[in-house]
Length: 114
Length: 114
Image (tube, rainbow over all chains, first blue to last red; front, side, top):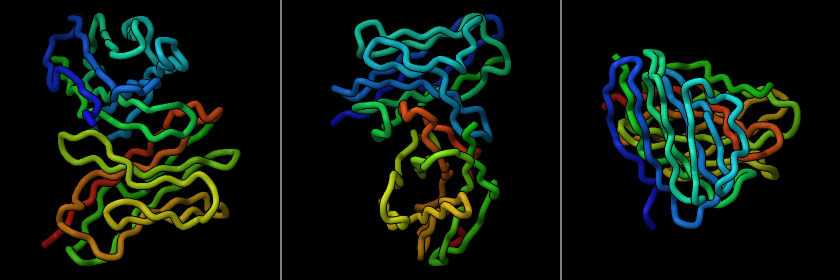
């Protein structure tokens, strides 16, 4: 079966610009996660969707980050405007169900903000 | 609040030698614990998980981990390391409420000497 797809794989932007990342989860997976992984750190959850509803966005910087999963399938994460500290790898993961179900991770998008 | 500590940032072992990666967690109830591996440019892959029952858990690629409640530890072991095991390893605990949110440690980079 196809894995979690993410695009683009790499993105370089200047601070104050905007950027969007796309994720297509494994078919049939109801739960979708966006994690931010800063160099030298473990991934940190930004937002979790169950179908097209938000389960947890407590660590999403809502003044600049937004995410949507309109049809309960693919998802977009946006940053506007970007700051230098947003440089990180953005990982998308999906699982069949929440509550301990195995999460399958995409390859990530490496964002560099200059 | 839940947290995960991986005391070793970087470990180097010789090929064929045994390996133990340390993980300590902080969690009030019975934790759901995970070990993931991340190769360069790749997403995270689940090695093994502990939910309940037998405290010695077997995973893929010859890895195992032992849950020790008294020590709040979930150390990863492998009896004989292969060069292909060189990667970054993350320990994670499922957040409270078991929504699926994972809280990761900062990771341990494994280097394998020929």
